[in-house]
Image (cartoon, rainbow, N blue to C red; front, top):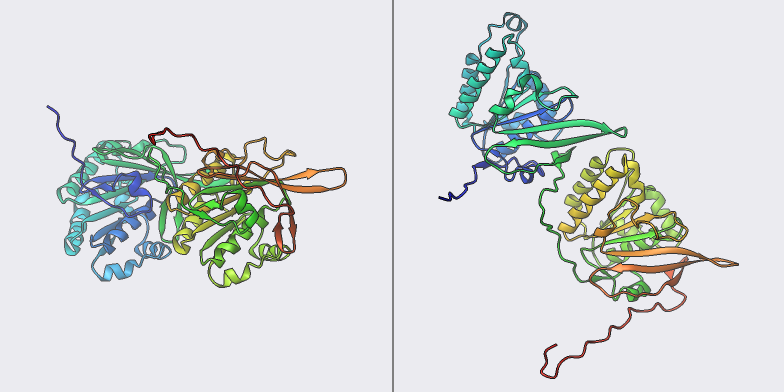
Length: 489
């Protein structure tokens, strides 16, 4: 007989991206094990789970076996969580359970007394959640492996009997694939999460992986994460189904001639790639778009990996584009960074925070060729794919520039990183050399969901911006199919 599958009860962690990976959150009333090396964020994850729960009406207890209580409060303050206020309100209790030296030497320590203290605090505040940080420090006092396991099973039963949703953290060595010495913890816990802090191409990166989740599905890949201003931020791509917004109505490029070639302009919520050689006018073209959008009252977020904000503003004054009024009006936000300054995960986290706070209608990234300096071609690919996915899901129009070195300007993969297939429109800028001069031409390689011109069009850059000496050609007119006399095709 077929039995209908029932989902296990879960507690949302409210940690950005984690609930999507866990398909809802941690198992309610059960144990989750978080393991990882130094600097991986075990304590931060536990604190965030506890603080966000307390602010939503689920009090919790934090038991620390390694750090002092004041250090825990300071760590939380750096993420914007006021533990002292939550303690005063009776929503959180912090218990410092560091082991004294004489007990470590004797090996006669029994956790029953500690559990009585923890239970008293949990009852006092009506705790629903509990985090035990650096549990390996407690287990280290036992010389007998059998006793270690017996005490741990006693702890597990105690947590389960009280219906507490618990998070236990243990340290692992850098070269361990599992918890090694405390491997039996994997089998005892209902959910096991591994945090990894690694260095790839001289750039530090962090990855989260769910090892198991008893009775539930979960994302099985490794997922990058960073420490944001308000806690941990994960960047999951967990579902096979694409949730991108459909392409919207046309939005002007800011150039009448280019609008004519594109049959009205770019599609809203689309991803546009502007590709060309150095000096072809890529930054001038996207700045023209930004200025026109801001004048319509729309918001534009500009990410620049190649020059400072001041250099961008100054450089655009030459072709007659003054970005300062748009910046002063709060319509244009220019965010600059050196690609090498942080890893691709850090850049993605910084960008998503800007998207959340600024809420732009359009995003400009100049230039994706600089993203290769984030560590590796794979790091650049991961950054761009995740960024494009985020902006498409939010219905944001994105315009990316890319510098190509090919003399012909386009025979190679257009993005240089390998994601050109997810781009909706490609505009190619190139130089054409004659015997006496070098001219510029623009060509629409593709424009998904829209007609576009199939002609190469000459253009010049003047002190009034980009101009077309000859009237650009509109898209070719498609012949209508003849229909039947009865009206059916």
